[in-house]
Length: 210
Image (cartoon, rainbow, N blue to C red; front, side, top):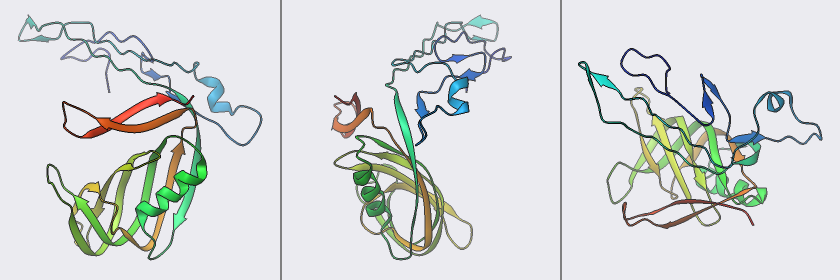
């Protein structure tokens, strides 16, 4: 978060972040014909957003080189879907079924809580996943889904309260008692993956739905 008037640096922001009020990139639609009250209070959606840090930062009385931070994105209306997975169901497969049923070209996982018995996680900079068996609480779940695949990150805690996480692999991830999940379908966008020469992996590409 950028803070105006910080002792260490002062930032001039232009775009959707103005004096601490945020213009959302996503407006949530409902099944009602009328627009919700929260949506009326927000400014119009913007196809492209640029945040600019223009003021020089000062350290020990000397100005650092001018720095510029830019961010571009595409906006879409969105529809929330809330659902529960029961004991023995696969977490990734459940998310895939909801994505397919939504008819959207892009989906984001907003939150997830619950418990797992089996889970396969690929930790940072590891080529393969590590399988865990036991009883684990889901403390965080986030990611994106497209028509072909998904990119999901999971944090879990064991019976001693030790938390760990990483990239959720599609195999495993069996629900223990429940998994309560909320996702956001973005019907105006399409997510896909394309090779990135810088990272060496297939990375997210966001485009408008034709």
